[in-house]
Image 1 (cartoon, helix red, strand yellow):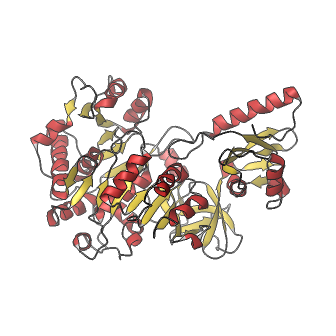
Image 2 (cartoon, one colour):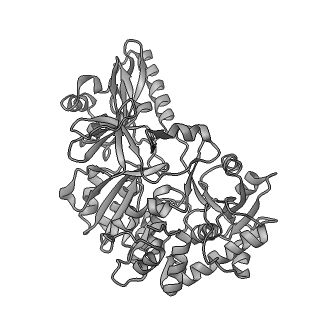
Image 3 (cartoon, helix red, strand yellow):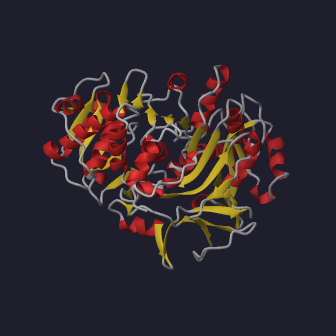
Length: 543
């Protein structure tokens, strides 16, 4: 197979179907021809004005605006690495990533101009501003002027370029995963063509033909999670590879009502969510409105996506829910696909390139009950940008194969599906017994009075650590903690039952569904100290 390059494929689609809508918002619309023209103008500016060379970097401090996509394409077309930075970061955090990524250009909306200016102070970086109503930044280059100056996309993108995707930094400073653009589209062939039931193409010409073929399903994707995240980015790029349309809500925070109206107006066929954090408010809006009549697929990855929310989504229309198990560093490891409520509970099916490894890092047979480290040996990134040590730790050369091993443990069910158990670093070692938090969380979440839960270890004099849980009640319910623990006791071994339970109105998950575990543990420890001071029991009660 001759692997197409994203930029070359998009250029072929723009030439073959110039009047198709490529990007739509409530107030604007770019055809594929206009998409190519804007991207070409930015590509010309990078090479002829700024003087960037292949493998240098442009940072994007942008929310889900059309410019996020035009800037990215302009970068890919000339071999410059696009680097998306979280627009919620403070100036010091932005500055750290500008330095880490060696960025030469920073593209930013005028509303974030002050943060950009502070972050770039003293650095040799060109600031490019996109007008979103904020004050213009003195000395910055206006994106509108770049577009007005015009320019053309090159006939083909240079080889050897990369795309850098920053991880979230939950275990330390964020690191950029470096993906080779010469093979990236091949790595995503299943999530691009496979999801719509089309055989992946063998050449660039075949890929263009599939995209413009009237019989190919027309995909209109609305990413409800930020484009800087891997799932939204890859699915958006995949939609464009199919000649589809991207619908965007260009706001720095999610307005679910506005997103629903946009989905209805543009007849969005695919939604990208971040588990329950986005899907739950969406389903609540859709239930009181007109459902999701045009949506045929909903995608999420790496976040808690409960069966209850999936069941409610399935009740709204004939749609497929794809829960991906993937990482910035590689995958997908497994798909949890449901087509109707009868398919629930969702089970993750391993992909052909995913394996389980034992403690000696040997591949094991996927027999019922087999426990191992989840690994992937398909097309992989080059590693982490400028971090050979971390690259060597995560991307392992073992007996002639290169694997990515993020650190997740899984148990095989024997039917091709797995039960994800979580990171070894998160395992609670209580009296020599290992407890995987995900296993306990699943049982807690099965109780009707529990809306959210996180399980972790707390220090214990006798056992080293004890299993602990912080939960949020469902719908304001009064949680009977002893009854909840009895519920757990019926389903799990005694040593897996939480010794301490803490009840909070909310776990204060981030917009992407993450919990700050350090904060949770500090909160729990403080409550234990208060209980000890008042002679309270070890087990918490609702409050």
